[in-house]
Length: 468
Image (cartoon, rainbow, N blue to C red; front, top):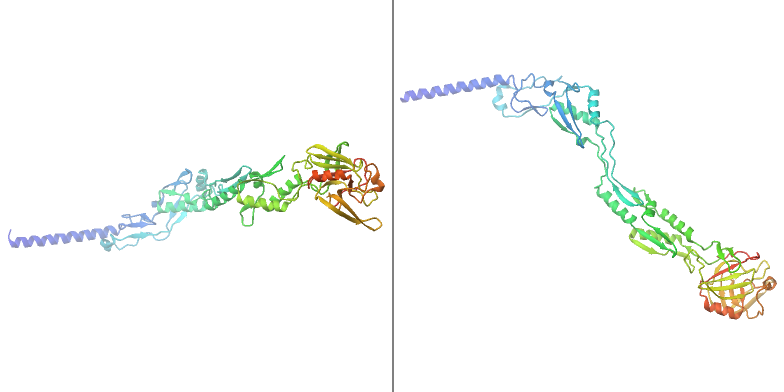
């Protein structure tokens, strides 16, 4: 081929190529004057190469929607089921310059279209309700701490089945508009605010678990009182800070109840006499009395510490024996009616004697009651006043006071006779006069704290003690 022929061939190549490109351009311009550009989306849906006059039509969005809820809840909703119609009353077709298609083909063309939504609300409600998605389903229940006599436990939360019903319907309609095939609605469920894994709940559980595991035992020798988990539970109370804690007042009530059942100080006592059966003896200075305030304070401290403890209560008044029969087997018994004394040691009669008690003149009678030897003193001078106002001073070798009003047991060497009815006219100022040898033996054999039970078996001259 000659050089001229080659030149002509190149010329025709470029003419043909130019014609083809022009034809392609004009063809593309014509095509994109009727169809959408590539990368065209409507409300996020792919709508490339769609007829311009149809791309915004509602028929494009009538589809079936698969909905998945919580705990395996699944349902399907179609546009036909609810008679869904989406009407576009605004822009009817995309606005695009077809002549610029070579450039626009590589650009993004997103469109947002608002539709008028029409559907049968009753039918949608029926579909949702049949699937258990109701407007006011069971509400979730927060996890909580439950306290019972068996201790503390965390009750797990309940998820319930309550959804944001209006939000659910809005998401369904929105999904239809966007052509979404699958809709997960788990985030629409109302969730419990407190779960079993909540750190604050676990912290509260640990605190209460420690409290309810405490066990404090008060030993009364022949019986025990236990403040354990069941008692703790009954004393728990929610405070102003919304936290559950032990109510000090409730603990005090428990301590007071224990005191009521065990205190003997200030109470009448049934006493089995040596030869006159059982008599009721009024209170004296002998007996047990719990200091409820100090006992409650110590108990509260132990409850905070946790653990197991066995101890005695704090006392205001103490006796010798902590059993129910706190008089025990070592005591001194005095019957004013018989003017006779029996002294028992470890259950055995150690000695007995007649004595002389207070004169029955309305002033000097020996008071009855459950008394005790609260001191032992030698070589004392007993001082007081006679009925005429004169003073007396009486020296004694063995002095054992039994109440807080100056009445006691002591030797009376000036007397030559004891017992009988001497006390009626020639009695004492209230004390019990004893033969010297007897007084000495009682002084040596019976320690401080020994109960002294003074009663009248057949007479009624003496008042009840008032010094306790």
